[in-house]
Image 1: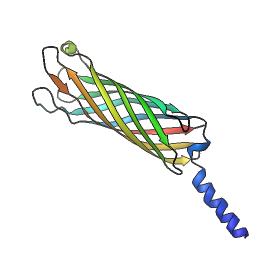
Image 2 (image 1 turned 180 degrees about the horizontal axis):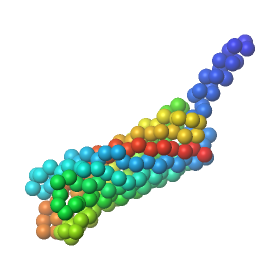
Image 3 (image 1 turned 90 degrees about the vertical axis):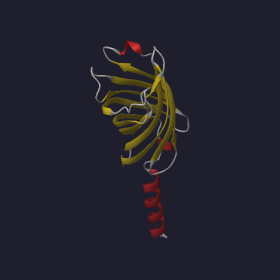
Image 4 (image 1 turned 135 degrees about the vertical axis):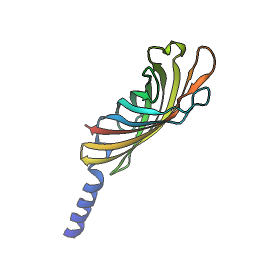
Amino acid sequence: MKKIILTMFAASSLLLYSTQAFALLNFSVGMPLSHTITGKESDGTEIKSDGVSGIFIQVGVPILPGIGIDSYKTKLKDKTPTVELATMIYNLYYLLPIPIINLTLGVGVGSTELQCSTCAAFDKGSASQWYASFGMPIIPLFDLHLSYRSVSSKIKIISGGEHDLSGNVMGLGIGFNF
């Protein structure tokens, strides 16, 4: 009987030590690692990324949806002068209550803008996304997670036409559960 109780205690400790059900607040900070642009310019030219930088922030409580913000800039390759795609998206997400792993699903809306010395020919565009994040606890109150964002974005050219700047963003972050 003593072995059964010890085994049950050990098993429940492994399953429940990282669950979000006991946390009062979860907070996550991340950064984009890569941005792959799958869309094309209005004339059909392919658009390539030359690096991305920025931040992802999320705050939430268990059982209820949380809120977040993504703010990042992607440098576009082979553009003179230097052109950056600035993206700002506000998110609503849900952290699924799964023991041992942290699975987050979310959606967001926001804006994109081309930033350069000659970018006055473009309007500010709209952006929307869905995303998923998979996290593994590294110690009871912290997790390391990898995220995938599918972003849909278009920017109108004032003289007519539009650039499709849709793509995928991969990110890495750390979560804290209090």
